[in-house]
Amino acid sequence: MAVFTFEDQTTSPVAPSILYKALVKDADNIVPKAVDSFKSVEIVEGNGGPGTIKKISFLEDGETKFVLHKIEGIDEANLGYSYSIVGGAALPNTAEKITIDTILSDGPNGGSVVKLSIKYHSKGDAPPNEDELKAGKAKSDALFKVIEAYLLANA
Image 1 (spheres, rainbow, N blue to C red):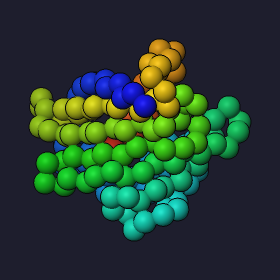
Image 2: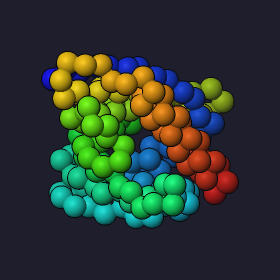
Image 3: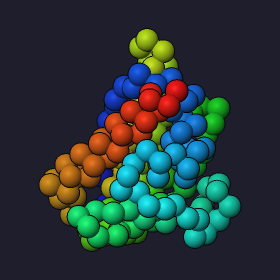
């Protein structure tokens, strides 16, 4: 298995503590409210801390699909969160898992800087498919913007 790492960074007008609370602590409640296509979030294993696996069900192209999301680590003091996609529609056939490490920090005008490190754990030594990476990033960016807009509208 090879691991391919990608770094990304974005900014948000939402304060880091509010964004962290929404994306980590209250995500199971906020994401289905903010994103129409998300139908449910259920814990299938664990107690909500590291090691917990959540099944996130959503509607895509008129079809109900799901993603299995495993919490790898929670660092409230540093506004850090790590999770892996371990199954379902968002995990390509060529990947064992995709791990996303996120750190939030103070950004311009009271907003946030969001730093991401994405580790693609391939089943073999082949690098990930560029089109799949671009599609995954576009979906992730769009999801983030919808949640951000929900937080700004409901502040």
